[in-house]
Amino acid sequence: MMRQLVFLLLLVATSARAELVIEITQGKDNPTSIAVVPFAWSGWGSAPEDVAGVISDDLERSGQFAPVKLANMLSLPTREADVYFRDWRTTDVEYLLIGRVAGDSTMTIEYELFDVFRQTKVLSGRETGPAEDLRMLAHRASDDVYQQLTGVRGAFATRILYVSVQQGYNAPSTYQLTVADADGARSEVIYESSEPILSPTWAPDGNTIAYVSFETTRPAVFLHDLTTGTREQLTNFTGLNGAPAFSPDGNSLALTLSKDGSPDIYVLDLRSRELTRVTRHYAIDTEPAWMPDGRSLLFTSDRGGRPQIYRVDIATGKTERVTFEGPWNARASLAADGRTMVMVQQESGQFRIAVQDLQVGRVQILTGTTLDESPSVAPNGSMLLYATKLGDRGILAAVSVDGGVKFRLPSRDGDVREPAWSPFLGDP
Amino acid sequence: MKHLTDAASTMKVLSVIFAILFMAGCASTDTAEAPPEEPTGPTADEIAAEERKKAQMARMQALEDAVESAGNVVYFDFDKSTLTSATRRVLDAHIALLKENNDSVRLEGHTDERGTREYNMALGERRAKAVADYMAVNGIARYRLETVSYGEERPAMSGSNEAAWSKNRRVEIK
Image 1 (tube, chains in turn purple, orange):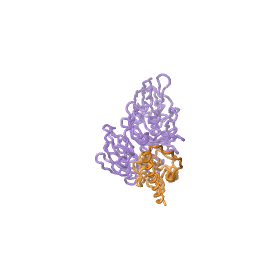
Image 2: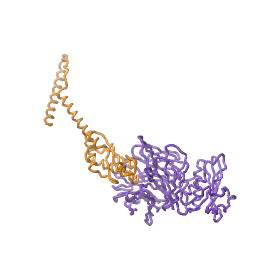
Image 3: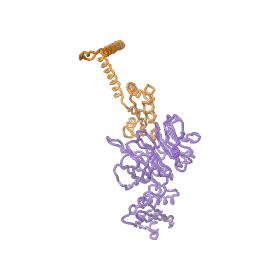
Image 4: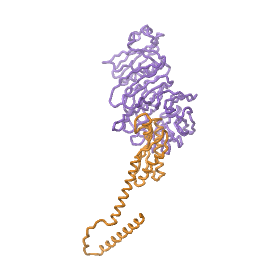
């Protein structure tokens, strides 16, 4: 049964910015019941952020947890001494999370997680950081709770990049590149242009990004430092300059250039600026994605007549075809496990997100809409974000890699596309 | 008739040149003041030149009209960069005009929204290059032809249906 749950994240409303809201459309059949009790606040004025609400929303969005509603809580403990397991056992709550927030310019979150049936504390934690990063501290608590209960590292304290377009009526369109928390909150436009922006991607450091901008009236790859805001135009070749992808060590950038005739894959050493040509074919070769060992690349090529995924060894140039199911496969990317490949598969005019196990070759289609593209896997491999259409509007959506959990992130206005999920981030 | 007219006009030009040289020669040796020139209407040669200019302008106008009625956009099938006979007719009109001027053209390749964005960027380039190749083969110098692909990033028509898609799979001649 699908749980039809809709909740809105209250975001700071500013005009003409593609703010995302979250609508969960499908969760697991038997989600774990957890009560996240409102955290105590000791500080000046009212609490700057509903930390328990942020954590509760994170866990719910994973599809694996069903947070208990505040109205159904028989007591609201904030300290271990106030916990009466009886209050929670009678309502079949499996886990209980309580905590406290304190601070001014520096904030501290302390929390305890209890197993209600065993009547034991299973986790206690503490997160400290600047007040403006309080939401991120809450996401870190979510990560720890998620890992404790699922055995998988949480990816809530991560960020996403996306491109949005405001279509102008009798005016040029505005393209915006936005960075936001993984839940869509705290969005910030980092670059805006009347010319197209596409293919945003993260360096492994979680601070440098690359993307394609047409601001020179031709496509060029740019590097952008999120901390300093510094931008650098990296390429200016004749023809295509696109599809940037950082190597796992962050020292190289794979990209597509057509300066030598047809689109081929190249690797640019970011330190020496030396350019190496990797593929050499008159067909379209594009959309490079690194294998975790940094020695080979997956890419899309229509050398067989229609687009399919191939793998090329960078040193030897040895190339082999990877996809054999479906007449049309493109834009592969790889989860951190090195074997789960996600891609766009087209059959009978339907474009859907598919996942292929590179070791056993099994392919599963994850989405059911018709114009799905740009899959980007969370750094923990649990979920992937992708772009789709809702009516005539471009929106972001997410699906778990097993297909069981789905949610949408439509924006308040404009078309949103090309999500890119950050790697795990360091301390805020 | 045309050849005869050309020969006749060549003769006229030569005679005018001869007359000018003769008068110049007179002027250099004649110390007396030259008689005031009588105001005259356009010579037959000037009329002929004017007519040739008009004919050329009319010809250019006809070529420009042909380009205008052919339009600046050619269309493609899904995932294809093949030039249809209708496309060739449109391009032929542009080629005819480009042969008479020195303009450079920017060929902007576009795709519909279906398919992945970077693949579409490559497909848009393939379309723009197919048009550039056709123009080059038909006598337009390569340096006058610039190709750029916008992929699916700049649709001419919004909407997720074949009516919009067919308008978006295009090369714009600018």
